[in-house]
Image (cartoon, rainbow over all chains, first blue to last red; front, side, top):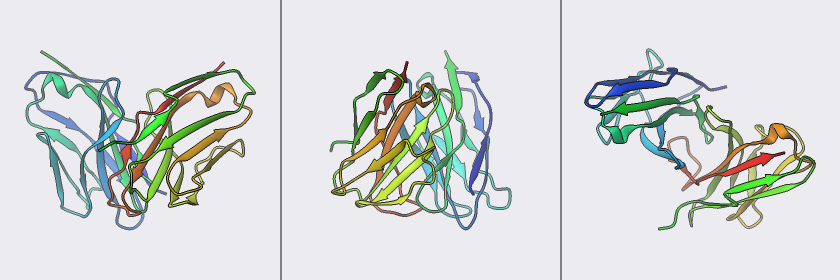
Length: 110
Length: 115
């Protein structure tokens, strides 16, 4: 079955620093890949997704590229803000259900 | 429009009691999913429905857990004879269609505490 390995946290960065959160996956077939974000006290919401190899998902300054050759979907942002403090979950879906990684907690300090 | 709603938001119960958790998906969404999330972990798949049909229940931990969606809209996850290990956040999600690329929209969750 599908699985996701995600960079362990917590990650603490200063405002305007560069962010990378690594995610690799194993899956059968042609999975879609997702990043979900959970802000403090809120539910999960989709941050970005990519549905086929070489696709780049982007939203709110975050980007991730679907790399089939390395089975990776690393999340990046060039300049983080305090408001980006949250838990980030990588996920993969081959058919229907999403398999999530354990999450990476990010704290951005002013 | 309204998002996915879940009730109750918090539930405290004693070991051995039955609990029912409710999920009201986004109107018109065909697929509905249940996940369980332990503290510090990602959501773990439990079961999902396409309309009223339960398509996959492979994630249900044991036969104390059951779910239904009788009219293809609201769903109920029932845990019988609760145990302390059942304490977790239970999350519901819905999507417009049943497809690998579809976005799942999550509700706020029900936090269950079994004493």
